[in-house]
Image (tube, rainbow, N blue to C red; front, side, top):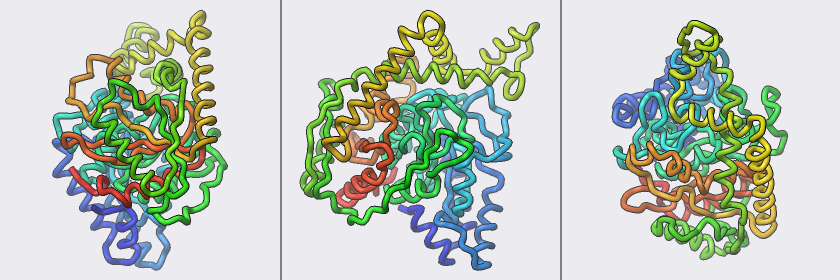
Length: 477
């Protein structure tokens, strides 16, 4: 298994060239993407960008900690001059006019952006089946979904197309596909990473984060991306945190909270066993296991599916077929709007726009949106209370294994329930990470770790420990 850390070290030392590394990734994409549909396109500048890295190294320049590392971008992050469609027909011919902040920061650290990953349209979905460009497929079983909405990014890493991919996480869209594809996926604290140049879905919930094969790689990329950005008023000045000085296998004294609400009757018993076996590894190493309660967790999904559609309906109002994107001409301006949006947006996007418009409309806002916002406050309070007793919280990432493509597509409620364990972290604005914790019937299971706001360091510490005593992250599809 090739890691970003090893690639960058080899390129900086001259052992390998950035161009050769990038060509290997592009060859892997060419040979494997046809059956997986993980990438919607490769970037025309990738080879020349790699050559520029090699030229700078030959000139004795410091090119950065990600020297020559190929990175895949989710199709809702702008890379200037490249297509960026957010998985939608309405933006099928849209080329980005500027770089997102994460694009700029990754390139400044020597990374080579190689392509854009498939995704659920405008990041609305849990399976990547809502993409206008067809579903991505899970590399562990191509008849099954990879999760969503960042499914293409997860597949790109799990299939070995690139060591790193970026996703966006609004209610679990990094962690859930990471779990279903057997890799690491990190949703940072809200505000930790700038969202300038990310196509907005839900402005109080969205966050950009990395997919990787190891926690160390995820931490490396986060070190490059995080930090205040004047182009994003919600980005934070919060310090990155002290580098972890404990060894990777040291969790003695770490308090690990186990919420009873995440282990309920009816959940997949094999997933439950895999996660509790992971918790037992922490206990054997000297961590303190603390039973905790998050009493409002059962209301998180309902609150999320009021707040998120409201914000999405507002954010997607800009796609009118007039200024940019897909356009269908009608007899009147209103008819042009209706036809452009009706033909340009897919069914799930339309469903959530209609839902969001309804619950935020006059006469219904108090009953739905304001009540959901109050529930969100209670959920955050629950986590604040829990973190008085523990340092990290351990729970399942997904309530199920990767399911067959098409199984839940016609049942929105069943699909929404796939997010039941992940939405709380977004509502509470805390960091959360999924790490591989076993296999059931040959399919990966994810362990979700959550920590206090801006305490990603505790996630890195816990995740590195778990990697040191297991080999789940080393297994490849």
